[in-house]
Image 1 (cartoon, rainbow, N blue to C red):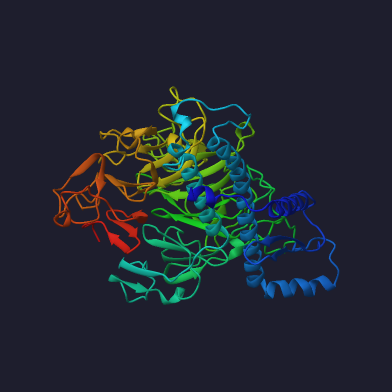
Image 2 (image 1 turned 120 degrees about the vertical axis):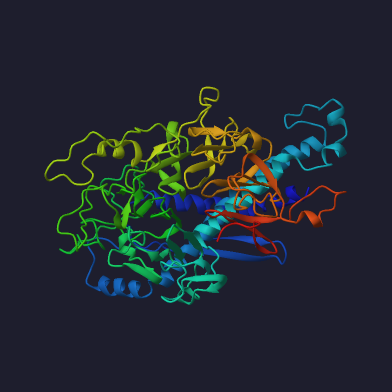
Amino acid sequence: FMVILFFAPPPLSFRQPLHRHLQQQQQQQQGSFLTSPSPSSSFSYPNNNNNTSTTITTTTTTLGGTGSTPGSQSVESSNINSSRRLRKKTRMKKYYEEILRLNYKYSQQAYQEEQVFCHLLAGKLPNGQTLSGPEHGNPDRRLEAPPSFYVKAARTYLQEVERIKRTYNPPSGDVLTFGSGDCGQLALSESVFDCTRPRLVMALRNSGTFALSCGGLHNVALLEGGKVNTWGCNDDGSLGKHELDTAYVPVEIDSNSFIPSHKHERAKMMDEVMIQSSASSSSSTPQSPYQSQSQPEEMIAVATGDCQSLTLSKSGRVYFFGAYKDTEGKAWSDLPPPDDARQHPKQEKRTIAPRGMAWWPIHVWNMPGKATQIACGASFNAAVVVSDKNNNNNQDCITWGLGQTGELARPVFEQIKDEKYEFKDGDDSYANYRVDKVIEDYLTPKPVTWADSKLLSMQRTIKTIACGGYHLLVIANHGANNNDDDCAVYSSGLNNYGQLGLGDNKNRNALTRIEALDGQNIHTISAGMHHSMCLDDASTGLYAFGRGDSGQIGQTNTMPEPGYCELKPLPVYLEDKEEENTDEKRTNPPITEISCGGNHNLVGTHGGWRCIHLGIW
């Protein structure tokens, strides 16, 4: 009943003005790209507590365009000087608009469910028919427990609120590092190479950091306003700054590096205002790749692999910098847009992509849709992409990169290197590679395949993804109604230690359902080098499987034997066995977050972070 009250619709006097407000916004968005300033729009709703009226006002901001007058130059200069303040105001405006839109959607659904529920209490259907039978004759029995629909609706609502908050109003904090830092990964100083306790990174103090990702020998931080900072080893371009060697303190990537190629973009995203600007003759430098461009994009998520880095913009575009490494250590990179003519200033001859590394962020222009999530493995990537198949906004899993052990979860051309090739004068070190096959099968983002596709032919909706070193985990809906009861966990890739949770150590090249997790209502997944962890939707059921000879699956209190692994998911308990009350069922405290490192894990609880058993430092 509390859930029903939580979703009870606001008064009609609130719903109608909000509906008109949203209609006005849709009409404004359907207008031309370059518009003149529009007056403020507002709506009000009564406050039932004190009978007063609250007014929310929104103002459309004009960004500028062609045909500007001389006076507009001073306005543009003023906007640049106050860009940070304007970005925050715009971001908060979007945050409140998205929350209002979400509340309006759920208020409409709650109003309909309220009408149905009231009829059920009266023993009648909405069409006037009388309910019969013992299951309907006693209304009190229907109120003993809230219907599962409302519980799921509440969970979905809170998830949407968190998503909107992370996008437009993310919580921020300070950064602490610990571990090995011989390549500057700790960001403490050039003289600090290891640290066994968390220490504050002073360079990021009060910088509004709200997202972090740790790569092989580098790290990426996302700051307020979508700024991207990197530090660590830059031998393979992992920092996105071509002029750096090793960064012992965080350095900011120029925002002009995050500019999309509208000309060659595969998935046209016209949900933003494009601004054409005349580029100077220096537009071919690494900071300004295109002659015709929009404003630099704001980043909302980051991910890192061994040597590559990914960033996700608010518009759903993905940017790549760094390199993939194949089984022989050869460096590869994503294909830059055809109109990106940037060249490393220290190279006499431009490297022909995808050979070598990407020293600065390049737009992944051949992404088939708008990305909502990104993840990196050792040398491969995955993304959740909203596609428009059959005019439905389905969420697909897209993979690309140098995945040579099945982690791409789709068929690829395996013999990318010709062992019988005879080098000739003028050949580079890539002459004996089938570069065309590398581009077509590996470096072009494509949808994954499913091992049970013949049994289940319906379209799946991806909930979340996680990349291990050489394997992929996916939570997907496999039912026709797109509800949480039809979700399952799938895995693909390297399985030498049972990290796929399928009960054997055979590799998979298609996403295969982990039947051992059926019915566990898995909500969160994470993957390490050779192990995996899962968390259920109650936030108390924790499971781990795969390699455990460093204590990374949390099954022993002492160091296991070399080669120890578990081929199927096993429950993990945070409390020691000695403290267990044998008369009661073992449970975990509420878990807020899980994260897998290479050979260790971190689990966040309301009481702080815990390191799962031993692990390797």
